[in-house]
Length: 105
Image (cartoon, rainbow, N blue to C red; front, side, top):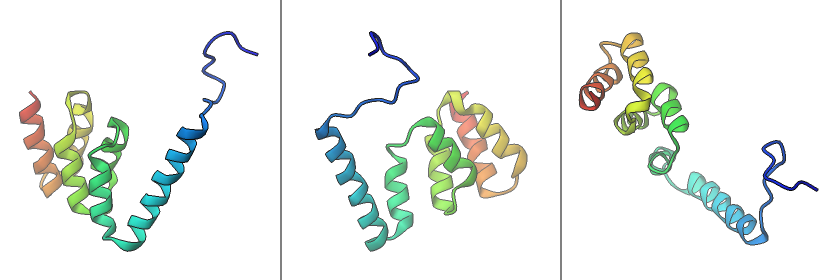
């Protein structure tokens, strides 16, 4: 038995948290089956962490999701914006990255 928080140990979920996560997953699956997946992903993007937002900005399937993700990137994500600008300078994504970089500087 550990005396402290051990980062190698998986986090223990209480029953209420587990039920909440199962409901959340079920709602997500339902939404993906019954709604426009692009709209579902755009909705999820608003609550995504920085890593997932950067991933969406770089590789999202739907252009609207990529553009929204670029718009949501913050200062710590400047290297990602620069990467987009370097790889796709004349695309709508490169232009959006350039605009966002200007806003952050």
